[in-house]
Length: 271
Length: 225
Image (cartoon, rainbow over all chains, first blue to last red):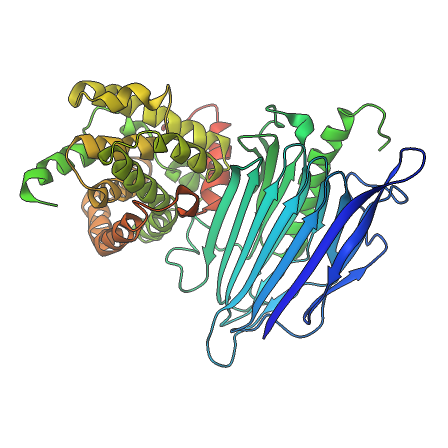
């Protein structure tokens, strides 16, 4: 199955100087269904009634299964704010012909714009063969929260093959480039160098121009989780855990640490 | 690789090259402390994982830097520096790579004087210096990649003998078994020699990143990283 979905948000100036973020494009194609929503849970940086656009991605069909090719394009216009979440976790399944499933996501966040993107975990079921590729282009002064969680197999299950690629550029220069290959086809993936047998992996990137070239300090969040300052106004929470709950606790702790500290530096913004 | 340059490759890949590499365990010391590596079998698995991730990353960047210096395109090295920074989320590992790079430049300035050492900056990343060193030694990108991926496993293997008291013969037997994998990784890395630096592999290894951050907080340690 092939599917392409598109989402674009732009800032609209209201009387009195306030700014509301308007959905300019909302194009869904099953199984990538985009829906306008109310806040799903606590959100960093934004508050209800602050004019942010809120959208959830829902699965309109099973998948991705091997052979599927999905494309998602997200444009957050200058000065606008988008909170993008997901209704449920996605289950990566093998296809009937053994082909690879792919999800290519392209994201552009304009000057002074904010994207808070909190998808639910991807679960790599036995025999899956999947590539997820996320390319993010941030303009100077853009803010980003991006979470990615990967669970290796359902309960008691050996995972299939997954490649997760993430590339973030800030003002045209590379900020973070990750390329994680896991599963039986990736030699040494289960070793003490890569996962050490842990079944849940996550990363959470926060880019905040308020940090300028002074990102938050490296902080250990646990035995296998840490806040890692990146070469730029950004930090990565990298975590390995035994299960989804432990992983989410690490992600939440890291997110609280990173978004709280940036609000402290922003006088006049109530938390 | 012709017969004329094989000796140059051996010189560059020799653990006795006075560039400070012996002080680093490549993440093995914290992995031993966490009981994730405890014998020859778990060491070999660790080395396979390291070769496929950090090893491929270093090999691809070394091959690319080697090709850039051979082509006289030294300006490309700055782009490679930025791309390598983006692929190392751990600040401790970025710092370690720059420290090893600085030490290798210092050694190479005397071992093989060349113009490229001047424009490399104060602390260039190790794989980039290794690639440049290969080029000025008359080696091709495939040799640079092989030296890099060999370096990625030989250091931790030697460290394992000291940290765990493993049988050095058994440890080297594990290295010998890794040979075909290292050759395959070097061949894969060579394909990136002339590629757009944005397309070079990243070889993420989350546990190595986290282990490096933990290790840096220890008060007493045998190895620098």
